[in-house]
Image (tube, rainbow, N blue to C red; front, top):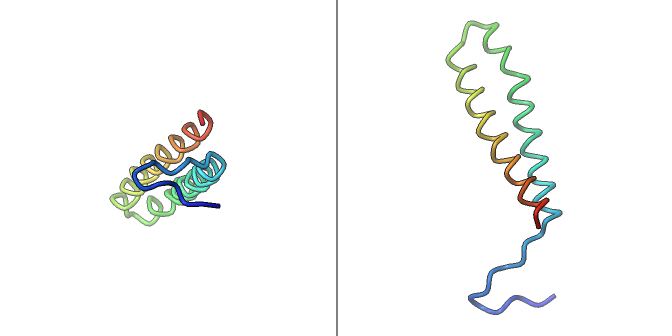
Length: 71
């Protein structure tokens, strides 16, 4: 496999993007499922922050999966 010429964009690997996107969605799911633990231990601030992070991570994962599907 040869390197692309300098200045040209690297080719996208849709399969890799899809796998990374699914992995990131899995991380978001784990964050979401573990959130009730923080609420149960009276640490609502941590739980809310974790929900926000889970939503952001899920958004990135969904974007990667959709982007891979278009390629």
